Image 1 (spheres, rainbow over the protein chains, first blue to last red):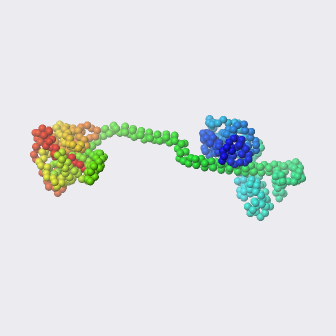
Image 2 (cartoon, chains in turn blue, brown; image 1 turned 90 degrees about the vertical axis):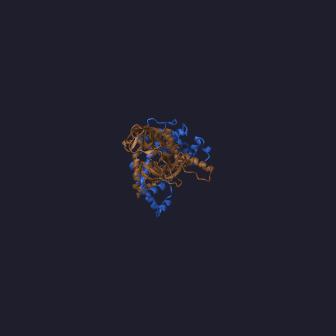
Image 3 (cartoon, chains in turn cyan, blue; image 1 turned 60 degrees about the vertical axis):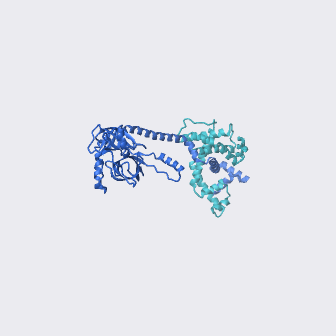
Length: 191
Length: 361
């Protein structure tokens, strides 16, 4: 990888907007040590560091993707702030309170972003659970159609339906069940 | 079936697949039908969150891949997990090691401290056989070997003690602990006479052994200058001994300080002669030149407390010999030529009959 390609924050953000995976990988590898160091210094494990960091990167990535990020500082600072906030929450959930957080960097206020992210995570958690409860082949069927956007014809071939109408019928039944499962647990919040 | 159609319609509407008129009609319907619009809203939310969920899963997978790729890279950079472990736990390991070392040596030291006074209180009996400095000898032997490769270097004796003649025809006495575990025994005196001997009788209880010269070149000792005393000697009597605590013969003088030996052992005397390893088996004589005992040992940590087996037990053993072995009765010396001589004269006469006993094994 040519390092100079993503030398500046702008270049990295531009790369992510273009859905360039190399930009994402570059960003990820660049800042992981900092977060890992921070988490490990504040009574976390390496697995927790990885978890928190990935969530932080997701927040950043999503914000870039829908162009809603007005970055007033470096990416590094932003990532640090997000991860710091997420980690504080995680600690509070676990009943462990960091009496004194060892900060390795300065940080900015990112409460809004992380809260939004958590709301989303909750929703996705419910969705994942609902899909899990749905069982096969419904889960794969819906995923293939709505997430991977396969054609109805390909799906009926894959699942061995005689024609796409049978597949559609099956899909409808699955969707109906998913809807029930999903709204049974998910109470929409601020969205 | 109706619902199924409705779903189709909703999806088509949401995907913007409807024709313009159809869409307008549907939108009009939405405005009036609250239930339908609610359904559309829910459906949209469901599909949206499902799609976003899919995207999020994909993104997470991507990050996971990046992470493992990164880990693989760093693993290559630092392949030694032991080093990582060491770096992280070095301090703990160091502390643990020093604590354990400290406790081990501390325990050893304090046990030593506790043992020291106890050691002084328990009397220890030390047999005075000398362990020859084998290392030094071997070294010289090696050097000799370099100078003269044709001859094999003589092996050094492992132990040495003292012994003395008891009859003219080649019998000697020494302490049995001196010749214990011997392969072969050599004797040598100040005059340079050197004989191979064998042990013919052993009395472990009194720590005495009879040796006989096994050399064909041996022609007899001649007349022995001392006699054996049959009764007990008196306290305070001046006594002396000759022995080989080192390579040369050493004279030692003192007095008979007790009629019993180590821990009240009535078969031996306590004498106040400074003795060293190698003195074991030496003759103990009084002023008149009577042999009154055989040096056997001393008490550890106690000054001037050495012990000698009384001559009565030596004589008893000699008398028992013909009964227990096939040996002919021994002719003991009857004439004492030391009597009345000054000490140096006595020693001059005596020293040829005192041998260093070298034990090989």
